[in-house]
Image (cartoon, rainbow, N blue to C red; front, side):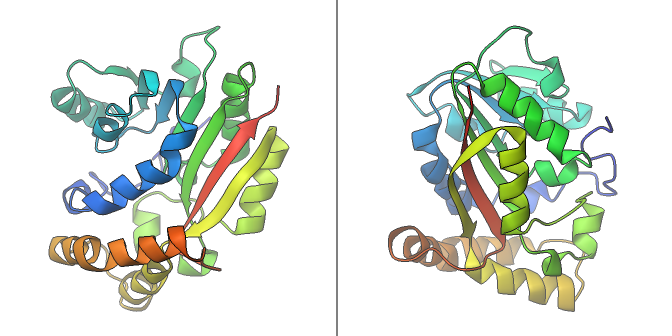
Length: 238
């Protein structure tokens, strides 16, 4: 199996800019939080930007973070010195352990063989019929030069992700688009203008001024028929 991020040509995945997306991260935890409890694995923890929020959830009794990149792991340990971190992939998780939940945010698209990866998640969750909380980039028409720089093998369609999850042994509980306004922002900046990086000021402005309104509408009024990303919650079969 090729290592995650093997195809990436960028060093830090715009962590400085993404650090400004505070409301965005909190919204993801709000969406996934009710399904994450007990013993949970965080796949692709990066430098720990989501980890701090997960550690605040009282229903998670144990959190194991997994990150394959040595440089990111070093930065993760500096930010969370007392956290449980494995430098590697889910294949390095403790043998014989059963899990209640797996969180994977913007990771699966970095893995060329994504279907075997999903099968590994299903196996880890099968005994307790745990939940996979999955977040991936959506809509192949949005695939742009920055996707290639990040090492993305694909952007997912909704039918494709549904089929891959079901084939891996999951029963879908939710599969929805996320951030419909971000669809247009991504298309303009990275498909039309072909920018190769995020602008910190724009990320901050979008996160503070636009995204809270967008997410309130999407989460309380109507789920959009398209979006920048796909959000899935799936239950492993026994």
